[in-house]
Structures are given as structure tokens and as C-alpha cells.
Length: 354
Image (tube, rainbow, N blue to C red):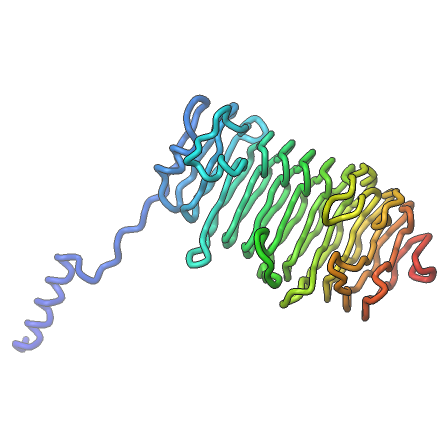
């Protein structure tokens, strides 16, 4: 062995012994158990990325703020109930805002791969679940009910999966997905967010999809709201659109909601498309949504609040029946390139869309 080889081998041995250049050991995932009377937030604070917080059946009066990636918050189904604290801590921004669970990242560092599963949220002044700046958020088998604004809501988030949840009796939308709620901005590309297999019952609106792109809404049951689905855009760039709405059952959304500063009264509405582009609405069953409000009807194209026309939207192969004022309605008089094809229905505005 040469002197040079001996030197190299010696240096290699030194690196191995000292650990220099070696990867830091990976964190071994831990499951944190939370029992009634204990704090969910304390378990979240103690957890490391990759950990699971297992919440036993019982009632917990607190809000929970998640800012660490790759955490799983998991209950025992609807028997795990989270309600507002009698006196929310003023230092807790999630509780102070009136939310139940908050998943919060930042523009510089989106919150990645948080999972919220199998629990019930009830009675929060604002939202059951509120998420902002998240990537690959998953919400499954969650019941969110009787909250002041939204059941499950997110902004500035991408690649989310909102599946098999129940959202009911919330003050505004059961499920709300938006670009941002506090400033004017172009549509967010959600990069494939999926809203699927949910039940949306007795809210103001079942689902509001506002100022986003590349989202799929499919296989949901939506009933007893004032309106089933709002797909909303405006004049900002990039435009809202490139949405897919399919295989949903939207029926008897006949509750009456009074007009607001931004919207006229709502009743008897299945799906509204307003101010959006390049959206596909296909193979939905939309029935018995009856009302006489401006947006009443099965599938309705409507000009946006700021007057932006919808363009190049395709409504095809839907079964739309028993809806009043009409099964299909194109009330967007400035819209261009919007097509209706292969739908089964009885009455349309104008005639001939069926």
C-alpha cells in the first residue's frame, strides 16, 4: 500500500468515526395520545413533523393552531368533538379569530402535508377549519357544523384533498376555496385540489369555489342549502376557471337566503357560473331546485357582480330536471363561447338549450 493510499484511507476512517458528512438521523414518528381533559394544542406543540396526535372520544373546548408540517390530527370519528372555549385565549390567533382548527403556513414557507381526520367541530364564531398557505392539506371524515361563516375553508393553498366530510348548518358556505379573502388578486392555480365525496347540507351555499383555477368538484351530495354550488370569478388576471364539476347530486336547495351587500337573494339554485372561463360541468344530477330569485335554476350562467362575462364554459351530459325558474339558464348576456350539449332537461332560458 502506498503512502498516498494510507493517507486517504486514514482520512476516510476519520470521517466515519467522527460522523462528518453523514446525514442527521431521521426523526422517528411518534403518536401523541390526548384524552378528555387534556389539551390538543399542548400535544401539537410537543409534536415534531411526521407525528400523529390521536384524540380520544370526548368533548374538547379549545381551538387548535397547526404550523408544523406533516402532522396528522386524528380523532375517533364524530365522538371526538371540538367546541369553542368559554374564554378563548387572546394570545391564540386561531381562537381569537373565531376558528376551530387553523392550518397556517406562509408565502415563503407553505405548510406541507397536514392531515385532519375523523372528528367533529361545532359552534365556532367564524370557521370550523381555516387553512392558509398550505400544500397537500388533507381533510377527511370531518363533520363541521353550526359555525358562523364557513365549515371548511382555505385560501392561497394548493393540492388539497377535501374528501368525505359533512358540512352542515354553517352561516355561509359549507366548503369554501378561494385565492384570498382579504385583498384583490388574480386566481390561484390550486394545482389539482379535489373536493370529493362530501355531504353539504343546510348551509347558505353548499360549496363556493372563488377565484381559483385547476380544481375538481366531484361526487358530492349537496342539498337543503339556498344554493348548491357557486363558481365565482371576476375581472382580475389570471382569470378564474379551468374547473371540473362532475358526478355531483345537487337537489332541493330551496332554503331562502336574504340579499347581502354583494349578492341578491338566493333560493332554488343548483350550480351558478359567474365570471369564469374554460370550465366543464358534466354528468351531474341536478333536480328540484326551485325558487324565483335572480339566480334560481338548475345550472345558471350569470354575469359576475362586477359585470365580467363568462367565456368558453361547457355544460354537457347533465340530467337537470324539476328546477325553477329553468333547468338550464344562460343569463350571462355578454358571455361568449359558452356551450350546452347533450343535457337532459325540460325547460331552458332561452329555449333550445335542452
